[in-house]
Image (cartoon, rainbow, N blue to C red; front, side, top):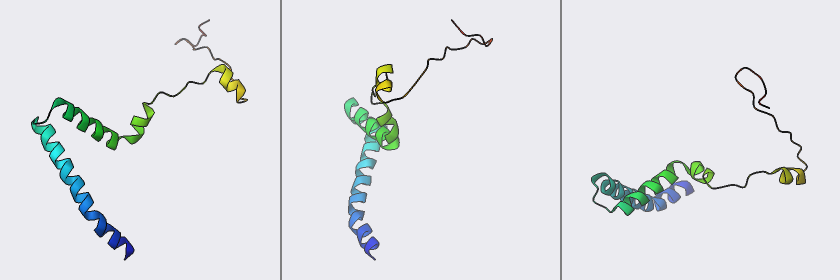
Length: 89
């Protein structure tokens, strides 16, 4: 019963969000909004559709030999091989 009441309270908000989304779609589709508004709508839709992708685009610091050593992580550099299987040294 509590879930039904919560859904009932959220329904007007969801309907409002859907109305705004429909207006955005119409404006973008008919090009009746500014280029900036189109870009903002597309960016917002992209973030909504792929939230992990937008977070992955943030620049993360790369691991350096010093930072790995400070964490107690050992490493060694492996030379890439040529198509014949020989090392490229």
